Length: 623
Image 1: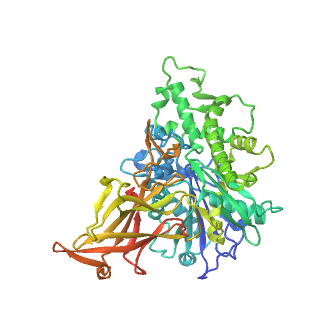
Image 2: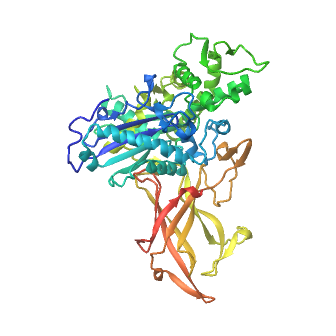
């Protein structure tokens, strides 16, 4: 393992800090760190030493995102994580996907996610939520990070050196999922230790982090500086659980790289684990209950069966010479089960190259469709030549089969070059560290969805529905409820710390609770409706929530609740009157939402008469 170069951290220096980047992935997790006095990509250290046995050195830069609880494994006396988890153990895998389970599936999401959960693959121990399990796993990541840093610094130096933790998250994730990740990270110790009050927690999208690495390598430090001003770079982040597509336009590369997001990115839950789920469906089809009734410790992620398939999956596409691969799995076949797919004597499942193509192709085709849609939208916006480079990153981005498919689709005319970094798995965690180190970031981003509040406006006779009308108790005016006040539009460009305000007027009766809530809404499609209960004139697949075999139209949905506490506010500043022996106040204030906060999360505050009032927070669990 490499260590901090001496100039990076000086004992007792108060103006220095450590930047630590964490790429918590569906299947693997990577960590990097760098001292704040560094300036180059080569100064960033990616942790390559992890506890536990490690037979496959291909994944030395990442540790499996897996935890096995002692309470569920008789032969263990302590919880095990990462490489410590052995085949045959009952373990929790792919838990990251459960942090975003409340978000409706899109047309690009793998429909078998529900089936995987029902089959026990996306399992949670009794009494634990997804946030609990992720927090438990990240606790070990945090401890290992601090252990690693302590090997290169004296305890007093480490104690006084602030740490910035930069977590990467899928760009397609909901605000609730980001908040769930934040909750899990803080429970694990990140920027929450009483002994380390100066530590801070930040979030950055995975494709943005990858873009920073790619542009730093190819635009400034790369041989020949192959990326130049005016280039359109499509970053395709293909991970274990998600695929994110974001396009950037390079404004300049020297003396510092500057770029902006061209248009709203797209993506889906169709990463490499979707191939695994396709394998499960194939096995169930061929072997029925002989496979379905096996415990997840035998057939699930981390088992000998799936570890062998992981090797096959990673090498698929490099050579076309093989005809049959064999995967170890002990099953008792029922009468009538075809034996051509199973060697009962050697306990081996037989998978042909044709089988693998059938497992890969549906997932690869979704990735290609995502890229094609982004290119089409970019060309409609800026012309045919706007995108001239596709950069593949993420673990799945290293797949030779995927790379060949994308190159054969987009790189044959010479208009677009398809590349991937030397180590696509490390690109994201390196970029996140660079974000904290250099402050490299897009000058502007594109909002992923519409955001706003509902409010009441004066009733419009002949236009509004009477069932939505009400009389305001304070001023006696007839109003209509459920009208949306959109603060920012999907696709709207915004810079860091971009703020928008929404006017709020509400009645408060003396004696009522001074803790007021306002629902905060979002809408994912291009044209936002006037009413919160409207589905719009048309409905695409992106507006459909899929649950089992049923599809429900999706319209405006609640992101969470914004809570304003007026308990310490002087109500005399607001207009008031006596009604029926009770005092009623007209609370008029603005809620200001920050969409481009540096820490990567939504922020809000309530303001009245030029002053911040009360304590304001967003409850994302209320959606």
